[in-house]
Length: 333
Length: 263
Image 1 (cartoon, helix red, strand yellow):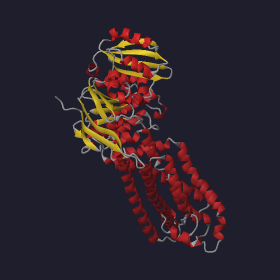
Image 2: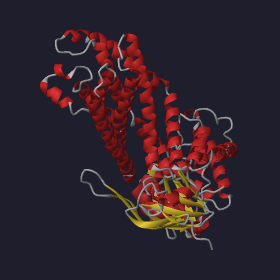
Image 3: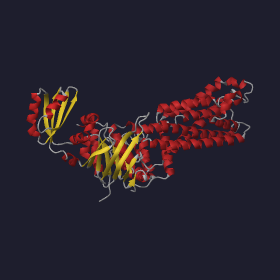
Image 4: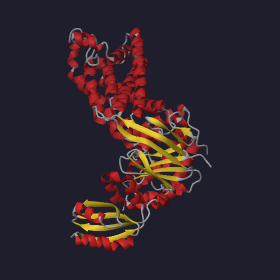
């Protein structure tokens, strides 16, 4: 079997807290292994350590302790070897706004050692492949969000990398542009020998694109596997009840008393609320749950039973981060 | 295609320089200001301080001829103050991170931008000399004198642009960079012989001015463009400037590494 394209072992990264505050521990013993030729998702709420992981693996940042190898080379001791074999698409743009997309691509090719004609051939083929022909010779500053993001990915591919890092590639894109980017990433995934590390806080994105997933929370990987494996760790169903002006404590008490309802979570936002619980047999528990809620005088809306989704996996493993992750979850729906 | 090759250092420097040159050409406002600023100074200072030439002990024929070398160096200082802003913009936008994660030499990133600044400095210098001549300044030192003056301005620019780049990479904040530059540039202008000969300056200013690189560069240009060139001053002050430029350029390379360590 081929060695993993990415191997991280016990990565720790601390930053000074500033003004005498304690160190910020962005990574806290993160361990990761990514099979060559796959798309791997790093999933987690904002501030979980996804971007820091990417910065360490792309040699931008030096880990405080721990080791990592990317494309067969150590990120700390053989940084230049790693840089020659990777492409990095950061959360910002990588393109010079005053140059045209084509100029950006050619310059990147030349900096990576392509000759004059090889660099312009490479630029032309990437322009073609990402459908940038119409925009290729206009200022990059005038591109729409989706087109600029395509250019960013194209820039990451100029050096024909073995490993491509995509840091939140669809954040801030409208649904149409996001769908286009997903199609693009799926095409990349089909390419021989290209490994993609995708960081995202969109569960749907991870579910659709990733062959393997690592859920990151507070600087550690809290769960890893294929999306299917992760869902399978949650046996049974999820029972969801929409609530109207709920008293969270009351609902919590009532639901916890229903035999067969586990891991009860009550989430309140303004006048609306939601009860989410796990149960070995969803359909069977709908009746008793509703009866108990009505007996306690809780008003409710729709009731749903669903098979486990990545949302549930995410909640289960990064559940402590619910408050910071909740908006993310809303957006992802 | 071989993914593991990387470009030679010369190619990298060339590409980085080209990028910044293209950027500056596409920002006509920046270029326009760079040209208009020295024009305003020559007209303004040339007229306001005209009567200084009548003060006993001035020691030069006319104020404008005395002033042009000073304006040449001031132009370098005021343009150079902005040199670091390109790096701050790159850090903010993400271009810097992409560059640093690619096999591009850190020194090519820093020096490529410096070369572009020096090219701008030469263009500005030629414009300053041309405007000075139009306004009536005399360059007795001829073409050689003007070339020496431009070379001195390039050395001063190398030092000052590197300083701006180093500060930019360390503070990473546009407002702070401009603030710091202003605090340095304005006193540096007046505690020098750029606008007033040393013998007319108050004693403490004249003493302080001796340690000012702006004075060194101005002295080189003044004597080189005069009819009686003091080559001792040209050589010694140029060496001091070159040494300073080398030290500050080295510091700006260190600042790039320090930026990366902060990531």
